[in-house]
Length: 456
Ligand SMILES: Cc1cc2nc3c(=O)[nH]c(=O)nc-3n(C[C@H](O)[C@H](O)[C@H](O)COP(=O)(O)OP(=O)(O)OC[C@H]3O[C@@H](n4cnc5c(N)ncnc54)[C@H](O)[C@@H]3O)c2cc1C
Image (cartoon, rainbow, N blue to C red; front, side, top):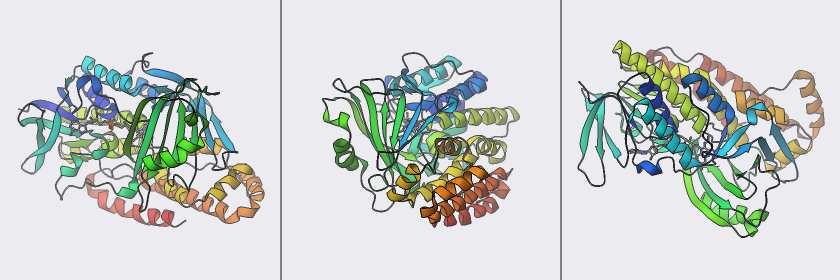
């Protein structure tokens, strides 16, 4: 007899959605967070989400509409600016609609939904250690600021502790789960939220992304208005050797180059954060153990958005945990179905975009300016890549664009090459193994694709 059927470490959007899914099915769930109850959800973020993620969750677990106090402003689309800032691509359509939101209110709402569904929430409590029995996960050790360590047991432990993957890293060497996320697969970011009483944003319903390989290599600057007089502005960069701390880039690049930064600003928040930007962890389960959200690297590798996918991961994890509890098999085999289900619904696209990320790293400002100026890259292509992970250029159209890009044939050939590799990795992911036995062989197929992508 265990204390709970499932213990979830971390009550962010990933952990809370897992808790909602499991509690709705009548399981005993303990959702633990180190933050105080009324601070859960308070996190460094761009505070934007596509409406399609919310709709998906509505269909899957009956997520209600976002409450009014969560929404800061309705978003219509996105303007992507070339490094010269003279040329931009506007992406507006049904899939770009969304909201900018209040991060704390969003987090609080999710925890309330978990509580309402029947999960027990334990705030101000740190999950410190994984507990093992006969070499298998059997529970956790927790501690508050004022109490001694306490052991709790459960049939399944879920690590939803965010980018630190704090429990994942404690798995034994023999576990097939990757414990460490490489530096080059992470993004560090700095962002401020301001009220801008002297400055009015012309198009507060358009998010702005600025691409500049010299200032923000492997990342971008975002200016996300949250209304005519409020903005979330930040930047993220890949943590590759020699990267510059994002706060420094903020001071030296963002502050002098945006008009609103020169007006009187009321600082609402100023802080840094980290996110994984790679394919999902190759197996997100072990015996009695699952990973959800950032801890499972369920983040879009190109734009770094991970709230929607953490919720999606949470639903799949919750559903598979439920099935495993019903059959009484919470071993790695019993939980395995979570891997292919997530891969099919989002992981395959993540993997394809992860390959694309390496190509983007090797593109120069001059090449991007050229591609934007000549219309070689179109909003529709970018939308399609970011929604499906597929580079979708029709044949006649492609020929015309090749001609217009005649001065830059090598770039276009490289685009073609990376498009092929993106297709290749998608094929590998469509053959994700149906049991742990096939994992090593499957993983070996990924390596040559990444190797090639890094050299294009
Ligand atoms: C700068 C930045 C901007 C971003 N902007 C966006 C955006 O605009 N849109 C978007 O969709 N995504 C964005 N993301 C990504 C998004 O924030 C994450 O992908 C998402 O929050 C992941 O949810 P999660 O539940 O996995 O983790 P988290 O939201 O990080 O939640 C983890 C929870 O675990 C708790 N915890 C950690 N360790 C312990 C412990 N030992 N014991 C108990 N509790 C613990 C934490 O307190 C936290 O509440 C951004 C990320 C960064 C860094």
